[in-house]
Length: 113
Length: 114
Image 1: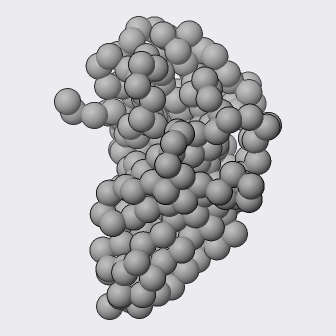
Image 2: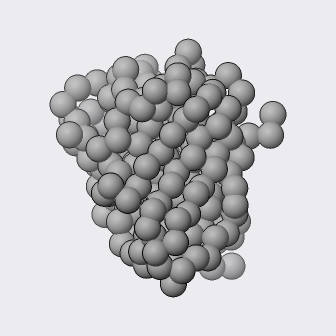
């Protein structure tokens, strides 16, 4: 069975600080990886995805993530966060050919002005 | 496109009552998913459909939960009888097999069972 671990449950940063959120997955085959963001009171929106190719994936709003197969990781990064990045971030995984995503428990990011 | 549409946005009901949540997926999407979000358990997959057929319902917590998709544009999730521990936000999402760009989520239904 596939699973996703997000070890940072709550992160507090000041504006302009750099961000890295950890995501580790467990799956026996080829994976597709995603990061979603949920702004307060809203639904989940796709930030970026990895299917194959370049392990460094760029998404919307200046976010990027790096797939490191040997570490089963897909960490999310942003060089300089803004107050508007305050949200909950979810990592998700599915296997190639499978459509059901398994989500991590989420990381709540609070950016202080 | 109006996106994935869920109704109602909020539902407050008394324990023991029947609750029906509704979802209209994006036109042309052939996969539909129901998730439940709670503080304790995060996002849990309840069930998903492909071309209106249930594919995996192993996440449905118990027999009190049932889901149907009578056609490509409508799905329901029913809880009967409801219990306080069912209080959560229920999300519906849809996707298209041909180009899997992840899901498009609806705005969710916040269910409170008192």
